Structures are given as C-alpha cells and as structure tokens.
Image (cartoon, rainbow, N blue to C red; front, side, top):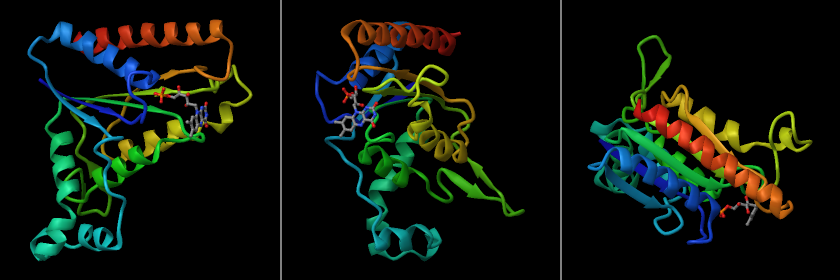
Length: 210
Ligand SMILES: Cc1cc2nc3c(=O)[nH]c(=O)nc-3n(C[C@H](O)[C@H](O)[C@H](O)COP(=O)(O)O)c2cc1C
C-alpha cells in the first residue's frame, strides 16, 4: 500500500494544514504498519510553472518528442508516475486569497497530462486515470467560509478549483476537510474548528480502512 502525502504550506511546524495532514497520515500508519509513504513538500520541491516549451512538448505525441522536449517534461513525467503508483493521495494546503497556493496550482499543471493521467477516447471524450486512488484534500482557512453558516461562503474558490481538475483526472468522490476559521476569529472558534477537523479526519480514516 502506497500513500503520497503532499503539503503546500510554506510554514514549518507552525502550519495548521501540515499539522492536520500529519495527524491523518499517522492515523493510517497505525492501521497499516507497512504503509509506504512518498512525501512531497511543495514549498521546498516546488514544481516548475508551465513554460512555452512545456506547452509545446506536452501536446507533441511522445514518439515525436525531441530530447529537449523530453527534458522539459521530465519533472512532470516523474510526478505523474509518483501519483499514478500511489493508492492513497493526501493533499494539504492553506487557503490563499480564496484559492490555492501557487505551488499547488503548479503541481496540478504538471499532473494533468495527456496519455499519462488522462486519455482522449475515440469518441472525442476524455477519461481520467486516477480512478483507483482514495483522495483527501485538507485545507486550512483563516476565515470561516462554511456554506450556510458564513456570509463568506460564496467566496470559496478553492473547493471548486480542486474538485474540477481532479474530477477530470477521474477522482469522483474526494474527501474534503476544511479547517476554518483558524486565524480571523477568537480562540474558542479556532479551537472548535480544529476539533471539528480532527474528528472529520478520524471518521474518514475509518472509512478508508473499512
Ligand atoms: C498570503 C495569504 C493569503 C491568505 N488568504 C486567505 C483567504 O483568502 N481566506 C482565508 O480564509 N484565509 C486566508 N489566509 C489565512 C490562511 O489560510 C490561514 O492562516 C491558514 O491556517 C494557513 O495555513 P497553514 O498554517 O497551513 O499555512 C491567508 C494567509 C496568507 C499568508
């Protein structure tokens, strides 16, 4: 059993999202002692942004790529292989300006690859290849954007921005644990937000193990 654990907060031990993702991975490790963990900290190993050369190389059929094109795609090829060989994917990040940190967007831009993570079908539709992976997104938010509870809920551009590209890659029912409010609130609200997040993580871990 192999799990890929990806963190996107640039903070170290003080990061809420890192603390929550570590807690979740530990819950799984207790259940699966020989769980193989592939850890990626996007604030240290930040994926390259899409360049003009990348845009050209990615849509050139593999058999026609020059050595230069192959080199441009190397990081992305390697990232796709790591994700495809994982059985579980744990993605954690802070909300930045209502969406994701740019490092995680670069991660997605390197992961969505024709003939690797998705295929074009004969009828012109596409089919994603991340269908067997269990996926959880853990997000930390300073404000409270909970639907129905917060006037800010409509500003949440993070959830759909994660849901869409992964649905395109075949991830149908990812789990979301959104810890909020963790910054722009009083201490009691923060403590309750963390308590809710830990409890949701415990339920999802049980579900993954059943
Ligand atoms: C640059 C920046 C932008 C942020 N934008 C938002 C935001 O749009 N909405 C929000 O609720 N919190 C926002 N926050 C607060 C963080 O999401 C919050 O502090 C979160 O807990 C940080 O997670 P981390 O500790 O894992 O880094 C922002 C923080 C920073 C540093």
